[in-house]
Amino acid sequence: MFIGLDLGTSGVRAVLMDDDQNMLASAEAHYDVTRPHIGWSEQNPQDWVDGCRSALSSLKGENPGHMSAVKAISISGHMHGATLIDASDEVLRPCILWNDTRSSKEAQAFDKNPIFRKLSGNIVFPGFTAPKLAWVKNNEADIFEKTAKVLLPKDFLRLWLTGEHVSEMSDAAGTSWLDVEKRDWSDELLEASGMSKEQMPKLVEGSEASGELRPELASEFGLPKGVIVAGGAGDNAASACGIGATGEGEAFVSLGTSGVLFAANNSYRPDPESAVHTFCHAIPSMWHQMGVILSATDSLNWLSNITGQKPSELTAALGSEVKSPNAVKFLPYLSGERTPHNDSTIRGSFSNIDIASTSQDLTQAVIEGVSFALRDNLEALRQAGTELDRIIAVGGGSRSDYWLSLLATILGKPIDLPEKGDFGAAFGAARLAQASVSNAPIDQIMSLPKTAKSFEPNLNMSQAFDDAYQQYRALYPALRGVYS
View (tube, rainbow, N blue to C red):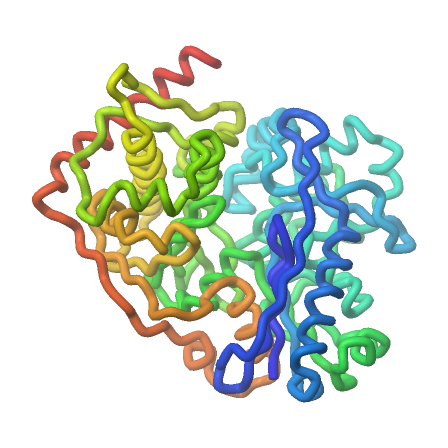
């Protein structure tokens, strides 16, 4: 038996998987994000511990016999968060999360130093960890001076589970402190940001052991002694492990809170100018590239709150056949944008609304706007040297056949929807747990799922959506010129 933990922004999920990768049980616990100021996004790390304890206790209560057979645990988690602890492993302040943009000035300053892009392979985005520490140094000097270790969110959870300060390559690649090609902390990058290697956790590969579960926790949750805690992965790399996107060119699109277009690579191919993220994968000798948009289903949820209709009701009103591009256009920059703009201050907008515009028009515009933003990601991946043949769809938005048909047409790529099953980050973490104690080949453990249905591009509508995409592309510089 194996346990996968996924530390999400809104809650933690635990899954129990057997050696044949059957999902036997799952449990969740939820917590809140606090936003004390505009652009801030924080969380209390103790909430993660409490949530994990609740989820594991639920698994124990429902599956005591299975829990006694667990061999390994692994952890996935939201990336880039800055969890600061002192020499006694006490938390010094709330964790600054991935979608916090307060450190935009610090990020710009780091990004002007060419060694960051050269060694990390990425733009220094405001959401990354290094500029967050620079903000703390500039604004909370007393806390900065007490910071003995900086841990990513899932690695703080690991500290509670094992007592060890350990991270792994895929998550560490999103800090701006990792030499992504060499898969190690960079002394140059740390020095350039006022940090030291002593403040960094030890690094392992995601499929390797990072420590053993503390005996008192094993006893509490009905687990045997000596349970291995594997390195795990950042949430997107874990999702790739869950969906089986671990070989060259294998790709998925995630229509979740944020949107991700992810492609696995067997070599290191940085192209920071494209605003594509180039990170280590969670398995040895593999990397990945991904474009990231900050508001995918979040955009539809926002519209849902405005209209008082459920997202499923909004999309159902569109019917099943993809419609011609809507005259109303939507820029989904509700929280700024990463790929391709690297702009934390831009905000979303509707354009070309008239007196006849309906709720259905706005829904169609939102879905098209998010899909055009993912087309931006596809073009950025092309610029970075990665061409995709087929794409697997995951996330809440993939439940809409309309959206997947539209997206296939806008991207010009077939999109495969897996058979019903759990292929998310928690499942990927469970697979990494299995890999940490198994002699089976990685590609056997991380196999691709069977396809339930495929969505082919509608070639009769391709030109119309290409033209609409160009109109969409023209809106960002115009809006930026007004609000910059």
